[in-house]
Each structure stands twice: as structure tokens, then as C-alpha cells.
Length: 224
Image: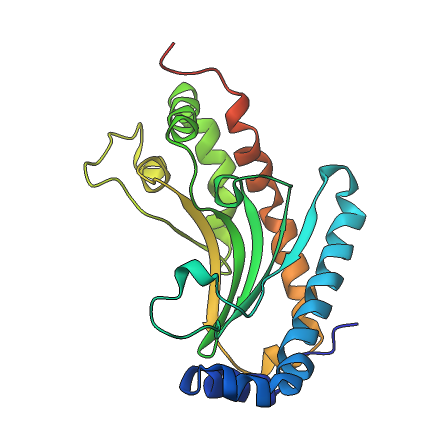
């Protein structure tokens, strides 16, 4: 059961950033396991079990990141990540090309939300075509976002703006990718078991957006 991270978790991340080498990490591996890895696994497991209890037919799986960087990507001489995250997603060969729920903890802050980071160009074309067919329907769909302050939309935009059918749809229409994200500085909330409840509530709020995104690939090709 997740009982919260501790101030030692934050201390470990900062110390790892300053001492990102094998000698230091091996000497502090037990601290890593106890104060960082284990509570992250407990949080991910609890949130995953609560989400899948409600959405059992979605086929979700749960992953927790490794502290070790991919050897092919070590360009700075630092072999360890200073952050950890977990994800809740459907199995896919291309992790970033499908919507994914995630939580990330780094030395400065924590964040969570729903990301669609590398949506295929054809998927985004289908997305714009769906908006074009009924802009008012999409405006009604995204209206709940205007009534909350937990999540904001982020994501790369096209350099050459596409002409959206309405002002309210423009923020979405010109995105190459999406992330509905909440981010805040590390503080007392990390040290409480109530963090799990906040993540579950947030993911439940975001579930209609997941449903919307996951169905885009089944739309007809707008170029045909």
C-alpha cells in the first residue's frame, strides 16, 4: 500500500543529480530502493488496481520506469535518470504513438496526466477531419476543461497554423501532439497516501479524452 514518498526521496534525487556515477549509486542503492523505487511501485500498483477495477475491459497494463538510462542514449556520461515514472496504457509496440496515462517525479516537481506524444500524421488528420464534421460537438466535448484547474493542454504546434473551424477548437486543431497535464512543485502532498486518490480522480476525469483519442485511428482516411 502506498503511504507517500518522504523528504528522503527528494534528497536522493538531488544527490543523484550531483553524483550521477556508478560508484555513488552503488553505495546508495538501498536508499534508492527504499525511498524512491519501492514507493513509486506501490503508488503505481495502487492506482493501476483502482483504475482497472472500474475499467476492467480496457486491457490496460502498468509499467514503472527503470533508473538506468538506455546505454544507446548516454551522451552526457551520466548513466542514471534522476526521475522515475509509471504509466497505465494499452500494450503497444510504439509506446508514444498511443494515448497513455502517466505520473512522473523529478527533483523539482511532479506531474501527471494523459499524453498522446507522437500521434501519427494520419491520426492527426483524422482528428482535424472529425472536428471539421461537427465543431460544435467537439466544443461541447472539451467544455469540462474550462470548469476545472487541474489540467492544461500542452503539445507541439504546427509552425504554419491550420485554419480551425472556430476559436474554441483552435488550441486543439493546431497541435501535432497532446498532453493534458498537471504539474506542481514538490511538497507535502507527495508525502501523503492521498496522492493516490488524486491521481485516480484525475485519470477518471481524463478517461473520456482517452476514449476519444483511442478511437481516432478507426475513422476513415480524410484523404480518400
